[in-house]
Length: 169
Image 1 (cartoon, one colour):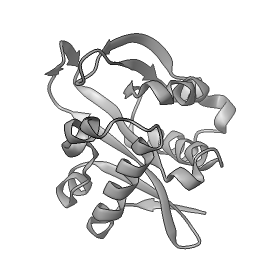
Image 2: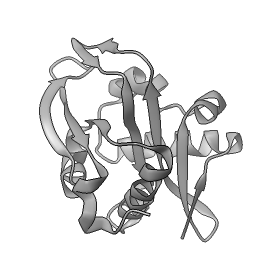
Image 3: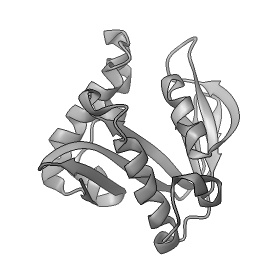
Image 4: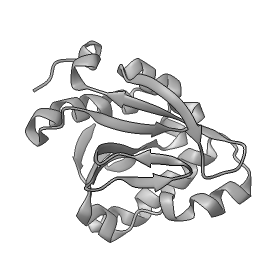
């Protein structure tokens, strides 16, 4: 198992992982039209953001990405405050529940010191709230999604809340 920075050549496979991981929860097809831009990982996205890949036996099985918002952003009657956001954590469906997400989060914890991330903000899919609670993230509130009659959970996380995942480096 290896974690490395994403390269522009990884954009298509990361997009495929985004869609297949989200589809693991059997969302209706029309949701994917709404999420199309959000789930598509472009070369520009990789250049602009901190994107880390986890591989096993040469196969990319997941990734996470950090986005730095330089200004507040209003979405769905919610203000995403400027700062550091954990935007994506996706694992191929065949590898979900096998510890790859935990390994990615251990890597994230070790990266917080290097990048001076004191706090990460997270908008979590309803199916992933348990993952973020295990990570030690603090639930703040549910907010409206970009899909009518659906919400996502807003969490805040500090590296100190994740001591059970291993030491910070």
